[in-house]
Length: 626
Image (cartoon, rainbow, N blue to C red):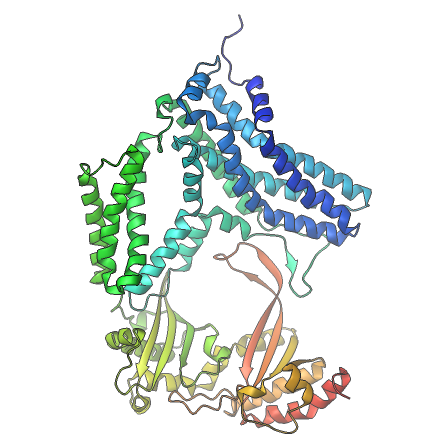
């Protein structure tokens, strides 16, 4: 005998397609114009087909993010009014069947157009004699994988919501909560903790994974950076990322199944339809409100008020969240929860305000530091604004690490003075500041600090001071060579590499030097040029090395009076390497370029002589002067 109930209803499935046709038609039309129509207009060249597919794959997560929630709102709309919820509940279809029917319909709103577009692209490619099968399948796979994840997430959010407008709100929170809280907490801690520079790479990586649109958008096709063209057979680097999110999407589907089966019909109209999520919503909203509005209020009233404004806004946020849940303004009798969450925020604020963790006073022991990564280290009076100030360098020499700790120690001792400087009040006798950013590596732990340290010119000659330690580092030519990054260039040249490009920038308005042999009209008007002869490039490089070793180039003095020579800058570019950054991107990009920028002052006589000798030849050969 045939059963009166079923686990899937084709009539309901087809009804969704006819009722919500604007959703899937819009998705189909957009992709038809972006891919097959665009390819026909661009022409039959293989490179354009590949380029179009690459751009389309990078756009997949963005379209998936938007259309996923639209599809979920369409197929779950019956849950948000008591009348429609009771009607669906009375259908001769099991709840499991309604779930499978509605979920499959919403997913088909996008999968069917994707298959149709892939087929059209295949036809256009074949008609033009282009073998784009692999690229088409890659686009289809990434589009389907991204859409499956975002749609499953939106569907799950829709089951927590009891109102149709709550669905996109919860969906937006699920997608961007972690990155927003991350940025907000960083801003708050930057104001609260002296020396705080940001969270470590592990936290940044976790935040990127917990913000799917950022992670999925960070992987793409392999490009040749040197030519900015896509290879004939481009490779997609994000399969691992798409697979991980697809697996998470399966988990979301399973959770959605159980939630849908146990969801109460009378919850239609509530903002939060699932009981156990109501306190999560209430107290989570309270803490986020306290942190966000407390920070904004403190920027108006003064940074010192942050602990108090955070507590006040947390309590206010708790009452506001209760009003949303109860759909009533009569919530003040439920004050116990507001007091509890306010107390939690007060404890957190006290821990930060009184530095319970010892963050601001922490100083490493030199013998326990394996290495130190110097991100920034320069004096305001000795800055060239070139890579001698800003290049990142890793040091393991105990003597150098000890000097860095000396600078760090003085930063802690002058914490109150530095705070006054940040408020625009200069300390008595201050003649300059040291900008210092460092990361200490001890085993698997990494601790970063950033300081702006005031100093007096007399400190330069006093051992044990930050200014004296920095001047000692400035005098170490080998150390400064590494800071610029020339040691990496030397290794690259020794391995058979070449300097890809040497640019010469001449900015007369930044210096008083008016050497006749250097002041060509072309350079005056255009500001710079590129040396094209590799012999000339290497001649300038060798002369620069000689000047650097003799102390004629890159010489810095902490107290000022530095021979900056900022009117002439050399840019050494080298590359064709492979870089891999597991924090910012999981893709391998080939053909990346490295650049070293160094200012050439009047004392760099060997470098200037070589440039003066070969510059007229270069300008004439390039047709820049007659």
